[in-house]
Image (cartoon, rainbow, N blue to C red; front, side):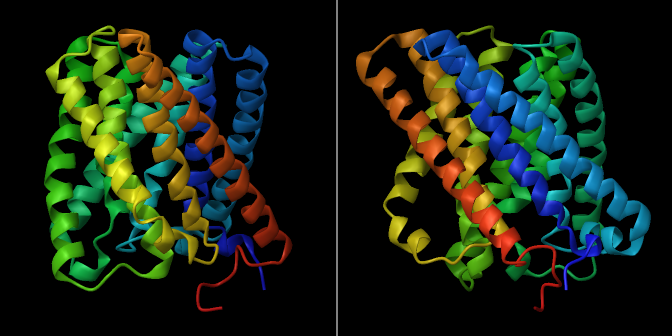
Length: 318
């Protein structure tokens, strides 16, 4: 049976993926001469879905508070709780081209909420009594490294110290968590099939770090920014060499983990092109934009198909 009780917090990854694609097309409009209507159309769909998913999850929280509490105390699902605040931040970035005052409102909600999730998750990790090495996975980056998103709009609305505060948290814990995640992958059992798509999340921290630092420095690409971009690029190419492993997977809602990281490296590449103006960077940016679009469309289709066949919003044991 399906029920609101089993509406997964992972659904906010849908907003992350769609917002990432929307932002990518906003940048493509500015720097690659893509049509503005594509960005506006995606923004409309993105905002409608955000309010729809957010409303369903609030209703779940009101009607089934115990179910929500279990998700937020789960060693794996708890990381996706921060996708709620990240959705606010990404909607803020996506809206900044169209409605800056609305974007600022979303930014304030997202920034405050994400700091709350950051402290909550770190406290959970420190004071836990049920964590195990097998629970470590790339989704752990979401609540902590998501802090680097704050300066993207934050540079226009608050003091630079606040932006550096969020940026520093995200970059510092990216290094810490990357070490932990790599240790788990190398020396322990492989990730379960549901979590294999989260490998793509490894792209997001350096790619988003590049975008955030680009904003903090007002469009300057120095050694540190180039370092972040090239690390993201290396991980992308590494995952391309593993494509056979991803093709074998059956659909899970975790497939949305493919989307936002691809959008992040796409946006970063478009920004690289805006600085260097090299033909190969431009064409690589266009390739990544088309690839991300195809992936988002395909994952959206698979999600709708799963909903139609009642494979979503059901107890996990089923």
